Image (cartoon, rainbow, N blue to C red):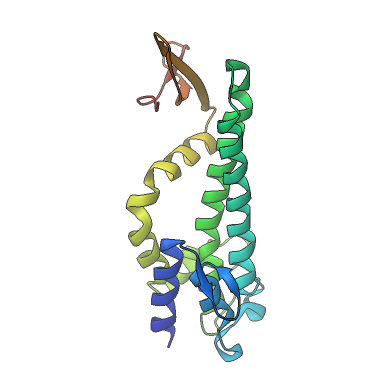
Length: 198
């Protein structure tokens, strides 16, 4: 049962599509799957985590809100003075996206049979791996290609003094805006880490 359930969760979380469900309305299919879990399967209370549907709803709702805010900021962009606001909204959307990916481990933990609870400083993905559950690894392998770009930006912003730098290129009457990830190079100057995105 755990294998079938985990396969369904991975497939549905991976697509993040929205469908009309007869009992729950217009929702992502994974929410219907999580809502239908029988009580005997769930161990979220034992492990001290939220119900899987609660975790999904909280993190997915944050992504939708932050992505909507980011799009609204981009659509209202009018001058270079808007760069800090637009880039802050983009960074927040990336952070929410990363939080959603990380929260998948709590969902996986909640459907595991009873074991010793993970320690306070023990990463859930390591706990799953130590118990030979391949669920987390399989999930990350399936989403790796689609999420690499944003995970790398998030990690570079989170673990260093890097920041996003807005830029604009004008060619006659055409203006293109974009950003690059900026760091301090060996000479102490601010410089792009990689190519810029326009």
